Length: 265
Image 1: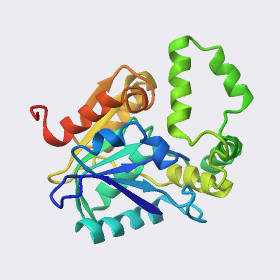
Image 2 (image 1 turned 60 degrees about the vertical axis):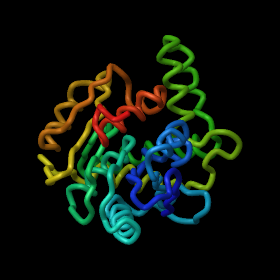
Image 3 (image 1 turned 180 degrees about the vertical axis):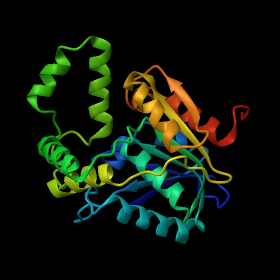
Image 4 (image 1 turned 120 degrees about the horizontal axis):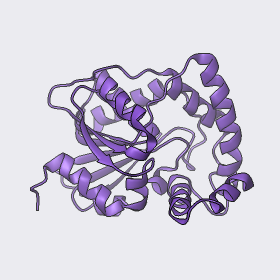
């Protein structure tokens, strides 16, 4: 696991932790928002085991990775940071970090995460299929032909979103993410499904903010109210992580509003 730092260097700068989504490359995932965040935050981007080109590692499981993040934050920031944003799968990490209580996060932001859970057999089946599809996509940096055909048949607005999603979530181009092993994808997807997030999470002096993508469906809104006590819901008439991917300036403004309030200059 690697931690990449950018932004403000002064010791009093608010720290924001960025946690990527499933099989995502940290740099690509937050490429458009990190330069904007750098103006007001000390930015720490997490690169999970198995998904960093500088390491020869395998993603183990959600709890092991969570413990590594906790240890790093305790050592580097005395276990207390201003904000953590979890993109998709990263929202599960934000939830685990807060509920476990080994570190303190003032503002946890869940980025339209699905919060899916499954039994072990179902999780194994899903993880097998996802890892089989994703491994070729990550190694080539291209979507499989059947997905490219489906996107070409979509309405222009949705096709643009899907293309942006692929280019912002995964490292594209020559070589793609050829360093990622299939086992890492399987372990990440499987362990996320079988690692439960507690219900009615409530921690003193911690606010949970949800960037709820309304087009995902109402069942996800119900999950947020199930898992978190009195969450601050930001409703967007958008698709999964569309705010982050397609509207970076608005995304950064809403993150700043969560951390500093809406009256900051």
